[in-house]
Image (cartoon, rainbow over all chains, first blue to last red; front, side, top):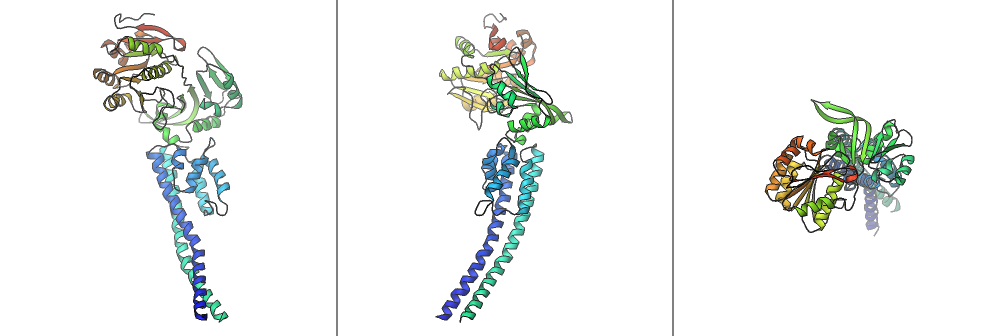
Amino acid sequence: MKFVLALIVIFAAGYAGRSVAAVGKKRSDALFLLADGIHMLRIRMLEERLPLRRALARSDAPALRLVGEELGPDGAGAAWRRVYIRESGRTRPLSMLRGEEVRALDRLFQDLGESARAGQDALLSAAQTEILRLAEEAAAASSGKSRLYASLGALAGLAAAVLTA
Amino acid sequence: MLIEGYLPEEARDCLSRAEGITEIRLRAGRPVALCRFCSSSLVGPAITPEALRSILSALMEHSLYAYENEMRQGFFTLPDGSRVGVCGECVVQDGVMRAMGEIGSLCVRVAREIRGSGQAAADLLKRYPGDNLLLLSGPGMGKTTMLRDAARILSDGGSNVAVADERGEIAAARSGRPTLDVGCRTDVLDGCPKKTAIPLLVRAMSPEFIVTDELGGDGDAEAVREAARCGVRILASAHAASFEEARERRVTGELLRDGTFRLALLLGQMGSVAGAIMPKEQEGCA
């Protein structure tokens, strides 16, 4: 009986460790989705020539879609600032974004839609490259942390089982 | 009026009270000019260059990239059909205008729907079946307003009408659908050059009438002639302050001389008819 309980504690602690690490995976997935969203935004803006509001609102990435819905006469930069303040709290759609990503999006939205095709092409390319780099870094970090936290959890469970035996 | 929301407060108040405004002119460092047919007034404080740029950006829905081609022509059309002319510092490369740098002024030509203004044109087309009609006038005299209303009357009267709306001023289509009333049997091809749009409409939509504005570009005459040969009737407009001027112009002159247009109306102030050419006379009569 004690052996079974010890096994349950070890697996439960290992699972808890993996769950903590999954937050990092969710973050990297959200950043990959954002990078894909910027790629599609580029096509919608520069090839389909959709107006900015419609191009943004059709995106799957929450950061882009919410700015599209918020876009008013004061432009994308102001809309982004309002959206970020409203939607970056715990459990909100933009809670995954950290300092570097937010700064990259600040730069993107500040000039989004405000220049001709060549300027927008350069702006969107730079933002996509930057977000993709951050997504890859987040994925690498989350992969390492996933193994580490699962092992730490299992070890903690083992220790608890030994101590209580 | 879409522009109203972007103007300085004083100009906005004045505009909401004013009637018969045909143009709104915004110039950097100058007050807003509200123009009527015969007069204009300056209202509000001077507009800063930054404010002018912001107004332009907002009018373009913060989508300057989507208006690049229009900016090269010096104007674009708002969702309510009003046309915005843009003036400023041009970026020219190899003799071709590539972009507009600093913006100096905007001229908003207010689109109007005046029901009944196209009745004279529609009546002429009914009275002379088989003939095409050319509307002539100087700028700002109401050619497009008359075309739009004539298209509505013909369409609601039972004819299939196709609008070749190169500049988007007749129907002000958004997402392929007209925002101004051009009738319930009207198809609109928006933003396509007339020389391409007219043959395409003939082939694709089998219209009884094709309505188009501002004939004068390369290939326009041939496209109109070919559509007329196919049995489609044409209602078009062109810039000319008199019949003589129209005959001297390359495209309109050619089409009047070869009989493609045997009907023509010359518009005067506020869309009134100042003169007409009828099939039998072939001479201008005021």
